[in-house]
Every structure is written in C-alpha cells, then in structure tokens.
Length: 498
Image (tube, one colour):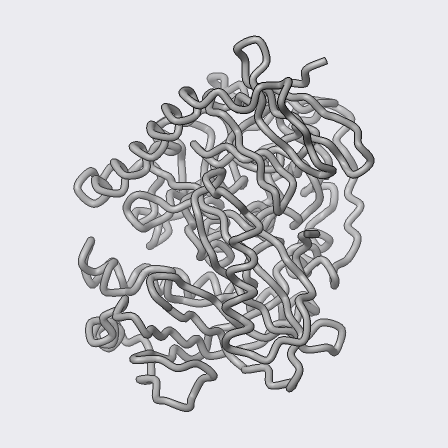
C-alpha cells in the first residue's frame, strides 16, 4: 500500500541548500511548514536576519499532509469552547482564525500564488446526535458568525441536523508554502533544506543550534515543528498525539460535490471535499483517527475510509492514500508563545486538526511577540498558561494512556528472535538477550536492525504497516524504516544495531 499525499502531484521543486557553514542570525526557525514560513515572512518585514532550518524539504512535513481546508471555526463545536471558557473566548478564537484566513488570502493575491485556492461553504452535520445544533446556532448568532441551518437535499449525505458556514476556503497547502518560501529566500531570510537540528543549547545571551554539518547562533529560536523538539515535560504531558488518514478517489458518475463537508457518523468524523488536480476532479476523504503508535493495523484505518466513501459515492478507483498527524491540547486551545518566562525559545503546538489556520496564526503571534508588539490574541493562546480546571480531565486521560502504554510494552517481550519470519516490507519488535529490537525487511530482502526504544523518553516504538514507519505510542515521534526521525519531539533516530 503506497502512501503519498495528493498535494505532491502538483508541487514545485524548491532545492534550497543544506547548511554547510556556521552562521549567526537574529532568529532561527526550526521547521519550514506553514508555521515556520509565516513566522519568517512576518519577521522579515521588521528587518530581522532569519534562518529557517528544515530537516527534509519545505512543506513536506505535516503541512503537506493536511486536508487543505481553511475555516474560522475549529474541530470542536463552538458551544464546547463556550462551556469550558466563555462567549468572549469563542469570539476571540473565531476572530483570530478569521485574521489568519485573511492573511493567507492576501498573500495568495499579493504574490500571485497558484495554489488552487477556492472559497467554499463548510457544512457540519450529524446522524448520531453527537452535536447539539441548537447550542451551536445560538453561539454563532451571539458572536455574529454567519450561518444557515442545513436542509435536506443541500448536501450529498443523509443527516439529522446540520449547519452551513459560508465564506470558508480550500487550497493546495504544499504549493502555497513552497511559493511563499521562494518569495522569502534571500540574504535576509535564508532557508535550508536537509538540515536537521540535533541539539539546542540555550545560554544567557544567545542560543546555539547544532546540526549534522554546522551550527547556528541565534538570539531567538522558534520551534515550528508541530510539537516542541526535545524534552519539554510541561507540554508533552498535556498533548495527545493522533494520526489520521486521507484518500483521493475518482468517481464513476462525475458528481463531485462543492464544499467542505464534516460529517459525524456513529461517533466517527469524516471530512470530505472535491479537488481539481491538473484539470481532473478528485474526491478527498480524511478521517479514521487514532493515537499514534497504538493502531493494531494501520492499513485497516485506511480501508475504513475506503469503505465509507464507497458507501456514499460511486467510486471508480482509489488513487491516493496518505497519513497526517495532529496534537490535541488538554484545554482545546493551542500553545503559542514563549516556552517559559525568560526563555529565548518559542513554541507553537496543540493545533488539533485545525493546523493550517492555527499555523498561520502562530506565525503572526510569534513574530509580534519577538517584536514586542501587543497582539489582541496573544494572551488567549499564551504557551505558558496554566489552567488546571480546564485541562484536568484530558490531562489525566492522556497521561494515563502514556503510563498504560509504557507498562504494556514493558510487560510484552515481543517475538523471540528465533521465531521471526518477516515478509518483504514488514517490521516487527523482537526480543534479543532481554532487549527489544526493531527489525525490518525491505522489498529486496535486506534486514535493518534498530533499537526499539524511542530516544525521546524511552517508550517502545510500534510498526506502522501502512506508512512503513516506527511510531512511538507515548509522545508521537515517528521514524522511517532506517530509523531516521520523521517527526515528533525526538532529536535523534533509533540507534542502529550491528
């Protein structure tokens, strides 16, 4: 089962250099997704000298595996945010996300970016009583958020109740980020690809970033990596790492619906929309979420999406399959800002499934904070906030899950090395002399042996049979079959065993 995001079919080559010499900058940004590129664009306006360090290629991380949807509301119903906070907070969340959507829209117009941007309505509906639409409509009305009650026949799904939010949007996120990066790259804003940060040393007056080939000395460092790199207990214990999947399909009857559809079916949520790729229409479906590293069969989650789409549409064939990651915060809002009082490191994490808008918003907030410019939304998303009552239940749930996973993996020895018979492309955890080993057989029969212990905090990784990766079930670090870091808080890959 090959996995490849549909956005990669229509992208541009970036070819930014690898960092090969020591440099000094005002701000070093780790990660060249939508958060990192937005932050760089905002800081460059104020004359800062910037270096953006991307471990792989620009936009090819989480941003390039997302839905491509842009909307002012969030994954959570507005009334849930009101119940946890208040009406003013809901209004600020929506207004801040609108500001980020306007920022993206203005960039597309100003820089003439061809990224398949289209304004669309967003439809949220259910057939299982999962959402209280009377409350949702009431909150929308109070904060002045335009909406229409959804009527039967308006969308290609059967439903009990629903709501339509007009003036939302969709685009190709990879193309947008790549074009923005090309616009930014010059002597004031250097972008480096294939440049992985391996260590961060924060001193009194500056920070030193060590990569495989050089060092970067900076006044400030921004973790635009979806989750902070390294050991940040105060954040990793309040975040839940989740993985979901996407598929692209061709339909027999050419009836591709216009709009962004969020359907709740029997306690499961699916996102559906159409996309034009090289003048050919496709239907995209995202969903089947689970905790990272805790799926018994990752392929089964993709098959679940295929079954759902085939039930609702006349599918001719499945054309694309891919996975994406998100981190859910304990109190429903992202953590954006200074890592801790007095620190020169800044973070942006906990975006849930709303990462494209929150990523752009984070870039705007972080740039304002470094420029000592007051932003009306900064306090709402302050990274160092502490709200124990609002976060208590989810905080406990996530940490109990991590503890249970540690105990489970510690007590399960894995396969005895003498009994292992790997198929081509398969990975397994084996027990050798009392130690766990992650072994993988590639498509030509070569064997790779790695330590099965995640270097972040010592959890045992699990094999992801759909995306051919080793995934950590505790804090979401992921490694390719060779042990190299794909994403997550881990700085270093899985140790190789001879």
